[in-house]
Length: 289
View (cartoon, rainbow, N blue to C red):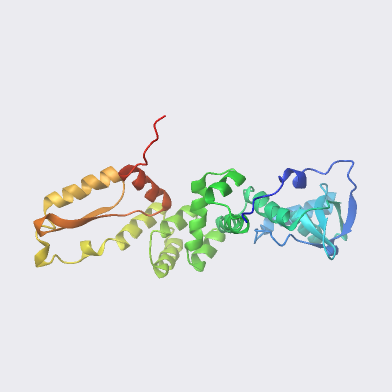
């Protein structure tokens, strides 16, 4: 049976009402949300929050639910972690009952994906988690987190990169633009090599795109002309290829043989490129009202 997201997050994340009972919960009895997509916390930002808590205490209560043993965080993990670092024995908290595991997963994914400080791989894993756990499409995930479908799709494609490239992206050594350009290479080994070269030489996204095109040139363009290939290198063929490139906005190569037999190869490098080519070459029929 297809699963769908439950109640909105506002009821879980709303600021505690003044009338709600605020408890002092020992920090050792609290454990993080196990569905948390965030894998790293900015050490500098966490230290700043720790210093603030040492001076002023925890001003905003964290939100918890009861667990089999102790309590589980609904929101406020940074405050909880900083409180531990500050040496606090307990933290102010509001306990909300009746929060299901499904709502906890929804909370952890959607609430965190709306933050600005997740790295691209964490976001991609979050989108993937929503799709798998709730059987959502990319379009539906985009609607839930308030983004375009293409943004979700571009993040998900990052998970096709080798682990070394993903780690460099998470660490900030590469931008998302760099990583997307590396996806133009078919071989994972070449992606890693070009990634390392990019970091060493501080290559721009345009530099990577140019090198990807050079590496991925069609083999027919590199191979010497065979006697049977006839007029394959004739000026008119190069002119036709150029016209097609300009019309389609991508790399096009034409292989011509005798008796006017041959093939035309049209390259695309991402989902958006494929969609654009399909719409250009074979637009969907529009229903007339």
